[in-house]
Length: 232
Image (cartoon, rainbow, N blue to C red; front, side, top):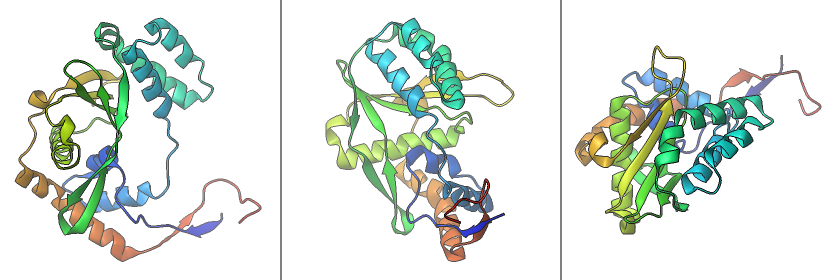
């Protein structure tokens, strides 16, 4: 099997990817950072696209679901279909409006680390609402959800003040432990009960410590997947 040197991360992964890594076990965080070096296919992209089309009311729900069933990639297809089915009631009942991304923000963490906050959308309702989509199968833990809400609130207050008074739709479509199918949850600011900014700094402590250990290790040899290519 061919071997290659890893390419250590130069910055933290994006918003919810980093949030999902923060646990009490620093060794697990280091392992997750190493895993993040090997980029995974963006299997959630089509699911988000179809979800947003439905939320905007551009097509009837059943037609959007039919389109999802025709996606060529089986993993993308299953993800999109499962997401749409689990969120059917929300998508059919929701007030339809344009959904637009807002610029990616950056949040300063302890030890001079920077975290990119995005993608975040707005629902152009009256009043306007922020939208966050979490479609990973593994659900965020309650404290991770609170930290995500707090990080977003802090970044909004610092860099996108025009949205500071907007309420939040934090949509989670994950598979709860012990279940076999996705469960739809939509949280507002009040339901998430964000941490204080001091509590948020404490939340980052294991990540900051693990990041130092991860960076100190440097590149490592790993076994490449698949057969050798002409470039090996």
